[in-house]
Length: 245
View 1 (cartoon, rainbow, N blue to C red):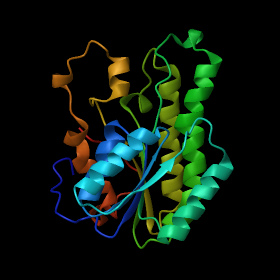
View 2 (tube, rainbow, N blue to C red):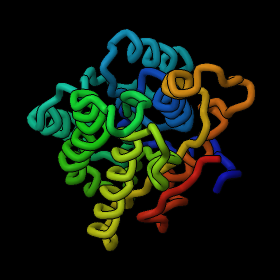
View 3 (spheres, rainbow, N blue to C red):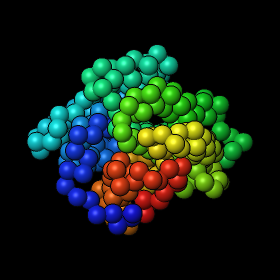
View 4 (tube, rainbow, N blue to C red):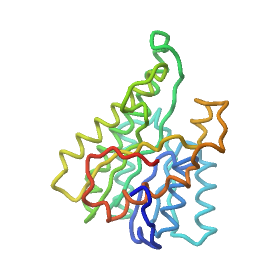
């Protein structure tokens, strides 16, 4: 699947929600899914970034996307319920969701983690994923074949010194994915997690400021797995943590 052969229009007629769609992996996923025929729903906190992605998609003649400005750190349960209702009313179903948005917090010794940093990371990386997944699962189940994809990390499977809150949040993400996958094993919904690996994103630059960007993958390089998990070819894959590199 890491050398998955992407065929044109493989995502045609699918509606896919992407969080963190304004930059990095989220942006590239949106562009790639749209190129392959999907109608993408762009969710992010910065309207200007979402509008730029929207304009790129329109300029290339891909299906018209939708924009949902939402700051996961401050969003309430009602915000997610309203989002789900809007998707249901406008599209009738949801075929895929890439829960990609995360924040790093800070890299620091565990005993020095600030409580507010911890709470912010858990809010965005765990609580928001929980509330959003809870709200959209009923709509995902309306699709004949739907895919819920969470974003994990190399530190979400094996703890790493100084990655405290972020590492713990990704352990929680993988656990959440496994619970959902097991509950819906005999349904049309599958749930999996992607570890993107070392990828040239803003978050990576903050964590590794001295790193040579030429030595790591670009978001475009890792798209085969992101497409595979949204395509019907992965219908039998459920409850897995997959490495994009």
